[in-house]
Amino acid sequence: MNRPKLLLSAAFFLIATFAFAAPPEIKLQRWVSLSSDSRDAVRETILSEVDKREGFSTLSKQKANLKAVEEEKVKQYLRRKHL
Image (spheres, rainbow, N blue to C red):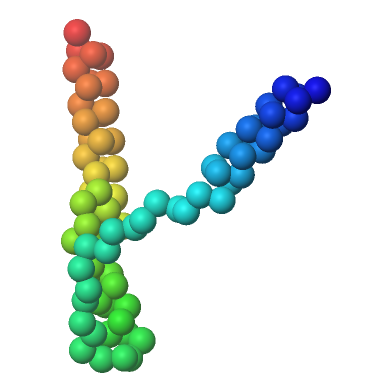
């Protein structure tokens, strides 16, 4: 009878440990000083900082990438068609 209680206690302890574990820390890359508190200035600052991050693409970059991919697909299709 002690063994089931021990196993139940151990299982509860493990579940509680993972359930209440602290979330991983988020590293802030750097602080940005705002020259103004106006909504437009804050928005522009945020957009410029987001644009600087790796892996982020703006709408215009996404459109350019999509256009390049579509053009490459057409070229490959035409190459295959002529073979």
